[in-house]
Length: 121
Image 1 (tube, rainbow, N blue to C red):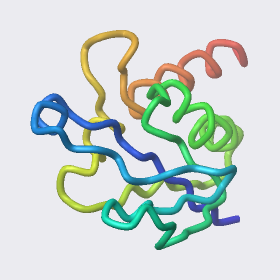
Image 2: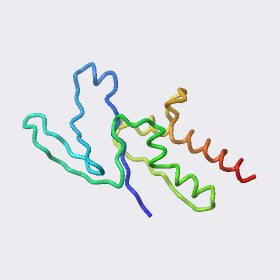
Image 3: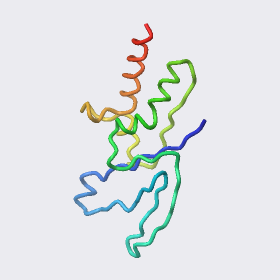
């Protein structure tokens, strides 16, 4: 089945230094924008799952990819498709950094595949 899950990336250092604010609010699987000039709620969207800016890459992996990796190792075909505008966090989410706390989904998926393969032998 197809699921649509999103990750709202945290502001980067440059954005924070410029005084930028995140205008998106989350409620369950719904997100909406607060219009700065009026404080009104606008642009509401619903998804299967939303990871907020405070979510770690490990949390994103657990909610998005972990079950897909397990199914793939069991012989099922699956795809994780990452889409978004420039600077929305796709590369960071997928590739991460060398810091163990910020490994990307690719690293975490490969690690799980090795672990699952080791368990089955």
